[in-house]
Image (cartoon, rainbow, N blue to C red; front, side, top):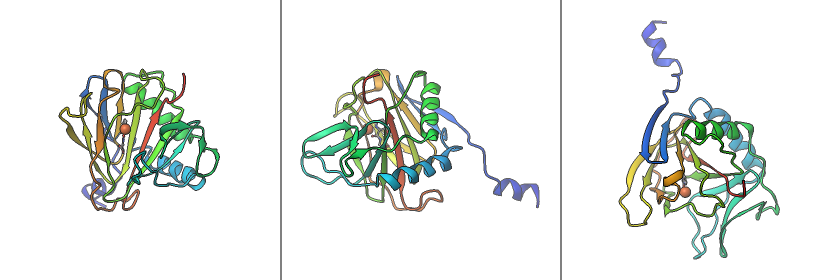
Length: 221
Ligand code: MD6
Ligand code: FE
């Protein structure tokens, strides 16, 4: 095999780069690339116990993103509102534990971003099929806004909208790709954000979907 052909076919090591988004928010490109297979194996374990489902919003719409959770608390939405719950309402049982690979990556990425004491108790697992989207929102159901959020993207790329502290503030778009991690906290913790409709495609790791893991400290520290 020629050296050129070899360098084309060999798996490339992750090239982690840090893109500042705002004070308190950073995009760590490819930060989870080396762990992607282990993370997807974790998603398979979690969803074998607590399958993806489409939750309803308080005003009666079915969300286009399929969701499940792992960890002590899970984010749920229904006719009564949004909240964190220790039991999966679909099974009336605790959410599956966070796989070790999830916890380790979340802690390390938070530390890389300047949040060294992050201990997540909730991991929301989102699955986007082509067309699925998440409208502009703030993450504000958590108990303590001094804790950051760590968000991991796997599979198909998605256009992420990152705005300001008011809904009408201008937004910047970032394409989040397989292995990218966004960490935000501090003064960025309550910034509006959303995901535009996923485009059609196929990804070697996930098929025709995008998986997003968002790690939070939802309960009391
Ligand atoms: C997603 N993420 O990327 C949706 N929230 O699929 C979020 O809503 C999110 O990425 C808070 C912090 C980071 C995020
Ligand atoms: Fe969010």
